[in-house]
Image (tube, rainbow, N blue to C red; front, side):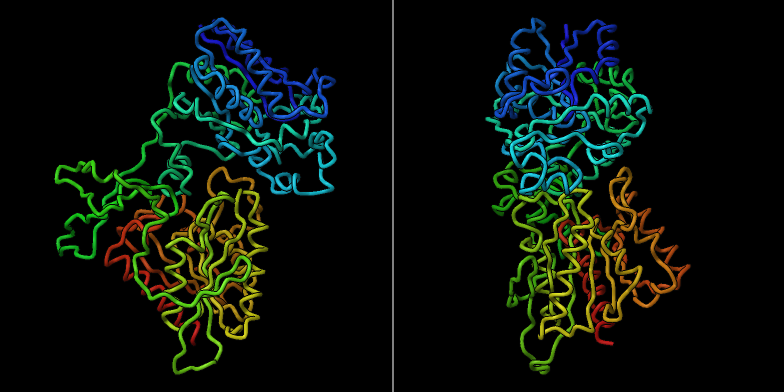
Length: 559
């Protein structure tokens, strides 16, 4: 028999699972809705030392008392932290972990870090913030629940009950880091994705293929996914469907994401489009996502399409692959979050130079190393700009979550101000060059372009939030902000022919709006290129596209 242990998100108790429990028990399963210490009707049990460890101990006592052989631990929101902590200590008792609309935290992460709202994530560092004095964190005020996850689909009466029964969360449960030994690393995991909260299987596949490196784990054979068409609280919005989905998860059903394999052509492409396989052929994800590449120089792709086992002797993520051009190193000066790649002295002497500011996408994990400006990709672009006589600028803005676009926009504006104030920069001749989901940050500059902004460039951008990214503020929609005044700044747009459809759709909407508002767009196409082609498709065509786009930007800077 299967026994489900159900652990809900912050401020709640076992009561939120009532209808889902009925569905599970009606199907013949055991169900244990958990009310952790200090939560729900156990509010008075909390003490000053109540923290994540307390809640892990709660689950261990429960799991140790369950006779069923197949125990499925279900964690929702904060609840996934104690679930993983308990599984790490009793892996032999757990048949499966279900992550209900919640990303899997890593060892050392505190639960507060996974909250979408940046203000909430900043609580631990705020001396005046909730829980700073050791007291509990109050539940959201009326209307504040979406900051903790979409309430789409939750009936009004259920939302009223949620607000009425919510209790303060002991601060230590959110701030104490999760500690994992790896003992549960082999357990199967099912991610239940709530599409109304921005998650979907399509999005997972895109992130595995082109997202930051941490997403590679989602292609692990032990991980599968199921979807629910609702917001972050399915136990309140679709409890019956949730029960059926949990039963499917326990049975091992679900979609498994495969890490794509791609062979990249080298510089010696033949006229017929075929090519000798490069010994640095890449197996794995693409550019700003996770990928692997043999680095010992021994790997090669066999004629039958297989991979020589030597290719796995050494692996690095794709975002650490070399830039497709090899510009000379330039003098690099670091000022806070900003790096300036400075051109060598030439016939211009000490005259100020134009500048190109390169803007990365994301979200990027705050502890990702190297940071974008230290990656081969942005080092390559910065040096390339400097080699052509302009100042190449790279910025580590703080886009760590979907709610961080306003903060990232502030970082970018601050960086631009710093660059324009530098005496080595011609402050009246600046271009902004956006990449991938960094394209949303172009909206402010396109809506009201300043006179010193001579050009906006974008490579494979998102010009509107991706499906389910409802948490992104309305102002970050370049395809919707264009107006007659936007025609003052030309756009150099580089498109990848093999782009993700969701990205391509936003670009087409932007092009339609640009045509309607008289915005000049210079299109640079890479027909066989993928998202992040500068790293994943190091072909002559890709190099030519980068060179052409740069020439177009420089022509406008120097006009």
